[in-house]
Length: 426
Ligand code: KE4
Image 1 (cartoon, rainbow, N blue to C red):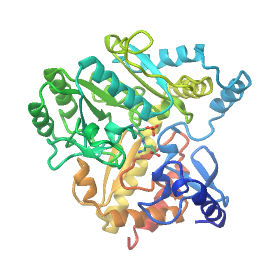
Image 2: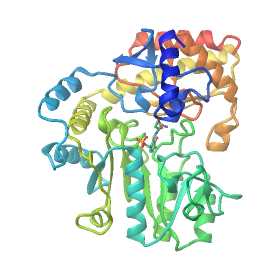
Image 3: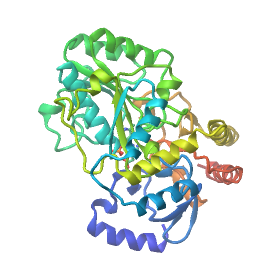
Image 4: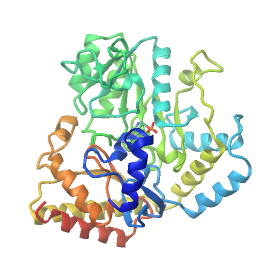
């Protein structure tokens, strides 16, 4: 860590818990202090000491175009001169809503909020109101933001009542959350059989990235659709991370499923605070002010954030975008695999569109237990070595790395050069 970052961290630690405004940024899982980033452009970030890094965090997903895209920046500069927030409806919200519904045909209506957490929290409230049920089912290893009902882990067995996964979450609330095992439809069926009329919804990441990237096995997503339909529960696709990462639309388009509700965030805000949730009209019309389900937000639909989202989605629709994104992703992941083989490093890479995770194991990683069983110490060493060689990976095994349209062939070369050095004696 450079001198300036160290100085800033010492000051920040006195003012902000852990010196960060979101825990994963603190580098706790990999050791060493966080880098304080001073600016970013394209595929690069620059720390407070002026060091340059090839960036694979991309603000945890939003920066799919790369940092500071000129067209997005120009549109934002103009928008700022028109005022930054009105607390009233604007044409921009209508434009982004139209674009969103076109990209996600499973949605008839959408509501914008300011974060992914607000989107999932609100979608769950809506599902509970629509079904008049309190139970929710999520998957171990999937993360949907920090709303109380979602900070719940499995009790003694996956099919038992949930227990708080954080102090401050009431046990009386946690007991309504069940945890199933990702890629294990049997664990889902067991829970529904125990509580056939009590579960309002199943919430699942469209393409999980929060246990590291894990892919749905054949028939898994279709199986969730069938089970939720059979028991009268809603299926919520949490596409906060996967939306626009696997294709222009979401994992639901890539995996051909039709969820009842969808949550979005990250890319849809182009780096500014935007979340969204949407779904079938009959469900969405339960929302205030036309329905009784309350949900609100001071900065929801903020004109500056809408502008960034609109410009980002416009650019993502350009011909060849996803081919380019996936070509770069494949070049990186293929290169890492080759080097791991040559260096005798046990490694599995899971790729979902333009997000990937390198796991240090010689076994497949298909759920959270598999991910936890990987060599986490080796991951930490790899992270540190890559950082030293100017490549900035997500500082946790249980995160996804993100490729942007700004990553060039030279970035791929630099990344693979750093991997080669890291794998030597890892
Ligand atoms: P936010 O409230 O952080 O905007 O979104 C919560 C959320 C919801 N659903 C999914 C699938 C998500 O991945 C997230 C947030 N992702 C994390 C990265 N694993 C954000 C980074 C952070 O927490 O600092």
